[in-house]
Length: 545
Image (cartoon, rainbow, N blue to C red; front, side, top):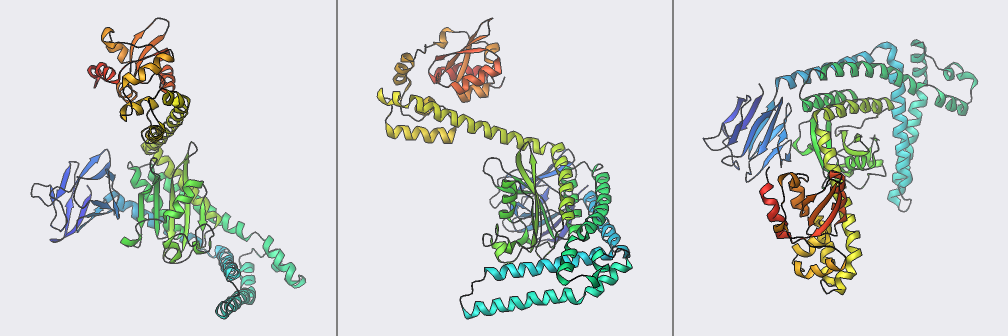
């Protein structure tokens, strides 16, 4: 069973939790009593659903925080998650999570130890030289952006020129070391063998053509493949998708060399980015969230972001405090996409020192992303997100249809004196905010009553129905979901053998709803107008059935 490592005014203590629900607060009635400032009587609750432990806030005064983020709904817990309840601090400790943490350390250690084999030393030197050259290129790029306008900027540009020249000299002066290493490993390049016969320009061109990067990729690729196989074997035995996802993230961070990692998701409604899983090796509370600028860019564009120095990247420099201040040294971010919808991302960065990411690193993270995606899809998490996106898309389609419908009847409503131009603008705002049909916006907004609307219905050939004279059966009412019928203010009152459905509607001009009902029932709909209160009255007996 998991343990809670508690730190409050009573000092440090352990609390083992089981499968039962536990109320947390300052009241003696709580299963877990905390003695600390800003803790409510019944502050939050811990409970288990399937293999996963959750925490939920109980409308406390000061809120409940997980890994520095205030929670607004039940939140799954993973090993070493930090919980803040008032001034009390709790760490969620899970034995299986601890085992996975140790396994992640072992896998990363095996990976790096394998790379230390003497036969791979040339690959390390290739990578070192590539990194040095990249630094030189970045310094040159920075120098070009500095204006040559004042004595101070000219002095700075001159200093950067000297640094660039020094970097070139370091590479040139150590060519002998590189040649010796290449010879010892039996992988001496053609350029090295022909060094005496090549001009400096030809030698540089030949060096570009050498398969150094391929050597790194091939060597690293084999090691990555072994790691991926072990990861796959391990996560198959882990039932909790969040725990397995955090394990994958931890392995990736330790192998690639980042100290913060997050799996983030995008809220379908408001578009905010929220961490689902986080792993922060530094443990700093101030570093508890990713660069939202980078995460949003990756999710919104669907691009994989690999940036050795975000301060020098035109997409991000000067736009984020964490980047401008130099807190984030390097970052890699991979979007998670399903059915063409960008649902979230795997995000890792280093806040301690710059990293030089390779193509192999990117391929490795992409492969891990597929495993994380599979876990989240299997858990049903992404299915729920997709449903929300589809509902949101349907709502947007409905709003567009209602705006188009309103434009068709707007002039008629004004000519009949039912609305004026000010009312028209109010109706448009209501359609956009509530996704309701134009006539319902007129009625619910108090702009005009049913009696005023009757004449426009009659002029457009729509007949009235008196539901008190009709027999609305459970079978008829059940042909349309009750919640849907109440929201759209419709009720079926007659169905023929020819699959013709008579429908009482508060807005008989609502062709969008008519189309949906025809698709749902496979019937041809004939709309009749009816006062809203009568339709609601007819539907009440069938609620909650």
